[in-house]
Length: 210
Ligand code: C5P
Image 1 (tube, rainbow, N blue to C red):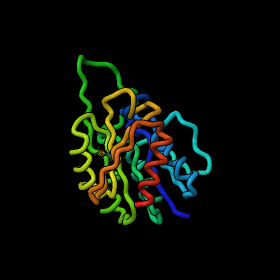
Image 2 (image 1 turned 60 degrees about the horizontal axis):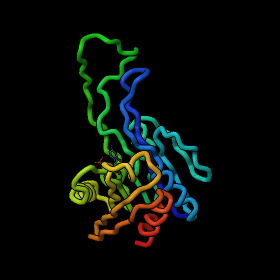
Image 3 (image 1 turned 30 degrees about the horizontal axis):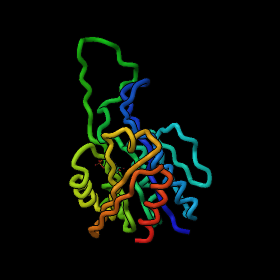
């Protein structure tokens, strides 16, 4: 049985015991990919950030909260995978210090120092030594193709699935998506606006027949 690892959802970076930094990822696209892969007979490991979706049955669920935990989970599970799809919206920065107690209001301004998180997708080749099919996502509000192609190369992916997140009819939080797939081999495949389930199924067909 072919094995796929998928990351999905946002991460949460704690500031203090009651606050965190996160983003608007719902996890729906990653979950749709995991379901489509499961239904196509794949052995699926889904590394999920905190989402409001029901856990999937018939899939190995690995629940994480922070970017660092997601990195460790991928590092632990990546060996033996045939396909890795990094769909999660991982925080790029995390607070340098996590306060032990709830921060109190003091002055009119407060400054939060953030430090870079580790790039999970960008570590798959160089750090984890993954050599099979690697797929990333690029959510962009501008210059979609340029940023996607740059990401494809920088992160040594086989495919990048690019989607605009500046509209309200596709992308973050909603049930529909519209994706353009760019391959390292130079292909460009447009998947028109459809439900995330249908987009996921088409995407998987393309990735696996490649
Ligand atoms: O560079 P950017 O974060 O926009 O790239 C997006 C792609 O990289 C997505 O596939 C996302 O899952 C992945 N990523 C990651 N680890 C990070 C940041 C992004 O795997 N720390």
